[in-house]
Image (cartoon, rainbow over all chains, first blue to last red; front, side, top):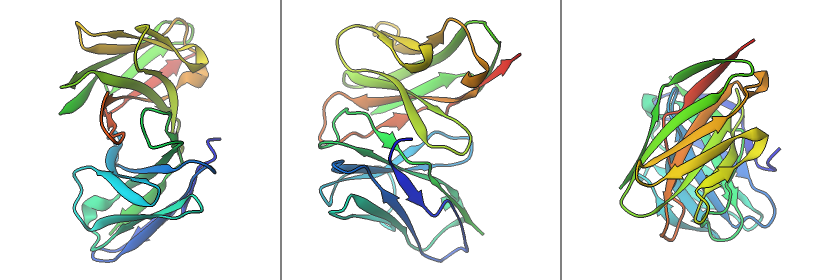
Length: 114
Length: 115
């Protein structure tokens, strides 16, 4: 148990739709990161938020966006879904500003785009 | 730029045998290195990490890894495999400096433990 929860656990969408995935971090964890894990691959860094501001981004297009709230919850939004967006989406929280502290991962949301 | 290569997408060992999972990294700056484990339908759990100092790092569940700068390697070992070790293992690298933790993961190694 990492204290990080994600919802929903599974989701099916069709191409072109929009989706919102949610993450609830441990209390006091000011940093949240989101990762996309395609089948058979390692997680890929999407972006990181610190105190409600994005402070780092991987190689993902702008249709991937996020929000972080003061209550240690966060969202990943994906617009104009594509088939290749089908993956497990993981959030991870850390205390502090996201240096090399241990990241605590949630169980993930599995998204299927048809 | 940084990258991680995990040799062997699948590794099988007998229960009680040595576990060796290989990881090589590439980083333009001194790296932080990690090993994570992922059980089916679960998120990732940190096994161990190397930041600075001692190059032999001990982690949870009896695992350890040695940072070898000259070989750019960070192989994961465990002297005696247990059935509960069957899972997928990911090696990851993060730059030593930087305002945020952009972690790059390898593609993973699935460990099968044969009774």
